[in-house]
Length: 336
Image (tube, rainbow, N blue to C red; front, side):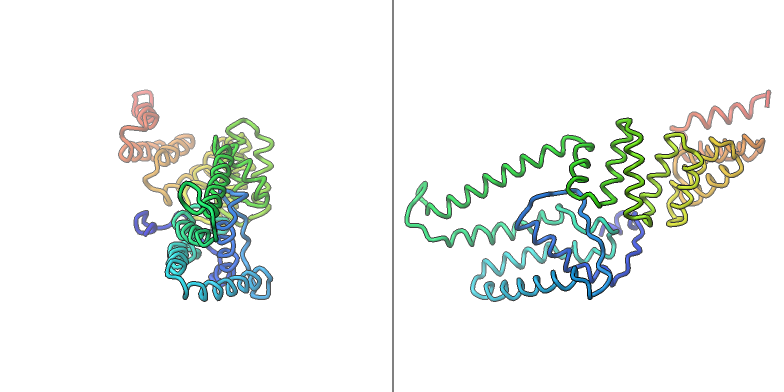
């Protein structure tokens, strides 16, 4: 449904389907663990793909899930509430599992995919606690189940309040996630972005490099590092880094655009124009793309081509690109 609404998914996924299947028991076990024991929460979780059925990360969680399924089946046959609760959990968790072929590595587990399944687990938990024997009353209801529910509610309220402190801003959030999941490339890129915004260039660079050390084939992380290098004035390194990103995924216009900007700042107007033209080819309606093709052409004294590109920019973005209008007016002035 998301692909239909957005006319495609924003990221190409090159993980073999077999690896998705082999990693599914680990992912399912991870979700079950977070339902039962929701601690060390994070925005991203490090879940390397399982590449062989001989790996313990495949057969050990699979064995545990089979045993849990057999036990759940036997209990569910005796209680309609238990059966309904278990069915609810797995029905509403199913999209997160069926969608694995569309998710890149690092996006396989998210807490938000447990929002709906958690209702079934809470119902199952309350039903189990309600079976506790109790001879005393508390507020007119059995004391033991009531005390257990109040205790769990208090612990969960404290846990929620504790986790809230990490959401005060992006820096605190990703610093915490990096401590909980130190080998997660997604987290390191987001932390690097926050460090750059705070002016900590050196540590930001270290985190970008660390993310690529963990996942060197991730084109998005390669693009992010290339853009960072451009904005920090490292134009030659940015050009090379963005070339790596383009080699990994040539469909995104951003690396071409920033490669063009890097080359422009190096004085390579021919190479810049080539990169900008490729950016236009992959993102024809993006703002400023035609302007920069024209600006690079103007620096090479290709004035007719520059005029055409400025006019195209103004046609696509008549209310936003005042600089294109200024350059076009300058080219059309009597001095020119």
